[in-house]
Length: 247
Image (cartoon, rainbow, N blue to C red; front, side, top):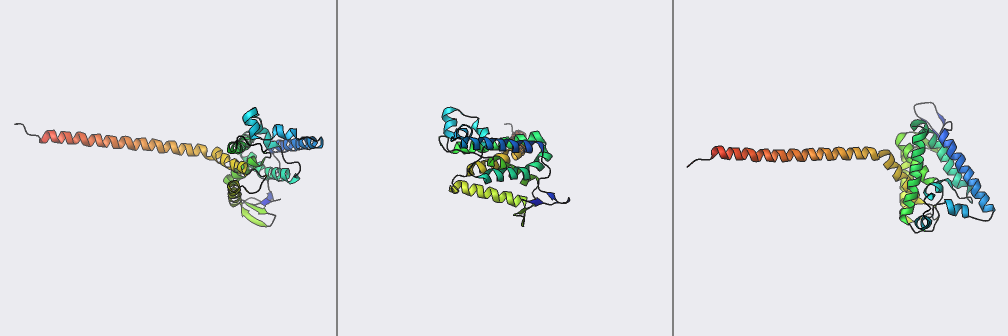
């Protein structure tokens, strides 16, 4: 679907499939087939048990839905699972090779669960069902944009766009659609949540370190001001004592 090039020779976008990405793709396809079989049997109970339904989490404590929902997709729209898995392949392989399987899988699950949590917090008593890996996929897009900002992707094989601008565009679209309520049936809050959680995951430690450094410098400056004020007061007292006359 897309290719990139950098200083190295051009290779198919994503490269050879990596272990965790391959496992995630297999799990998503297997779950999709289970959903499809459930629909053929005339029931959607599979979706209701494993999809993210805030009301059931709040009142029935079905907290596993925060994880399981990201492996389900709409069986009526093959494009839903196709676009998620092709994006996982295109962007996930490079991230896994860069981070290692453990960190990559941790990031994928954290952004997916975080996206689901964001969707839940918007309406903890909502009975709508959220399914799909899009929250985690948007998290991957963010990570790729931060690690490889200047790589080119060719939209529709024609239009070269730097990854950082593509990710920014997707983030703006997710934000605008989440506040406008457009595109019914699309969990835009989850999309935006995946980006925000990914940003905290990747940059939170740096931000916390900078805040602690700021606090340390602030305390040091305050102590310095207190010392200077105390020293000035002591000097004035000494000067007053030296200049005083005895009657």
